[in-house]
Structure formats: C-alpha cells, structure tokens
Length: 87
Image 1 (cartoon, rainbow, N blue to C red):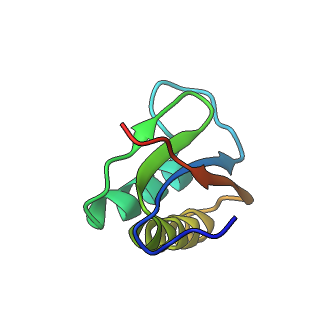
Image 2: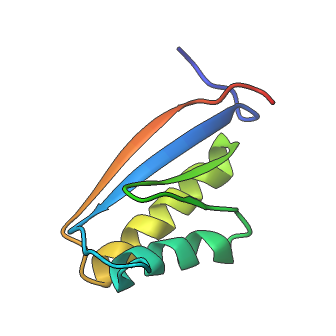
Image 3: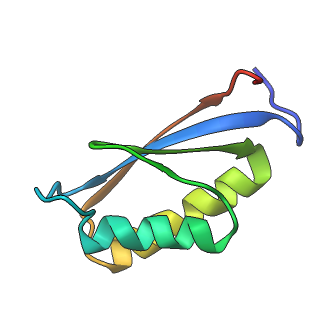
C-alpha cells in the first residue's frame, strides 16, 4: 500500500523500560513533550501512547519523540504505524 502526502496515519508507540507510577517516567514524558512541542496531541495510555495526523508531521513527531526518549534513558522505542480511519 502506498500512502499519499495527505494520508492520515495513526502511530502507537511504547517506550521501555516500564516504570510503575501514576505519572509517566522521565524518558516517556520527554517523548510526549517533544511531540506536543510540534503541536500534535498525544493520547497517553497505560502501556502505549498514540498520535494521529498527516503522515509527514506524524513521522517528524515520532522521530523527535524517539530521540528525546533515548536521550532521557529509554532502552527501546517500539512503533506501530498504520493508516487511520477517517473520522
């Protein structure tokens, strides 16, 4: 499948290691902050986080998030990217 420049995608990502607690650990929060700095809303879940938008901005956000998370001590960044259903 080929996605056009205006395609809407959903990116779900999980950042390791997991740290128990009520707030995201610093390596996860840094990824969330990096995405939000680009003006993209992040849906934060208990095990993964999700963003939805045009493919270009989403890929840029994921690149920023991965770099921020790894710089903050993450050991792994797992991504699932798929076309999103239009709402």
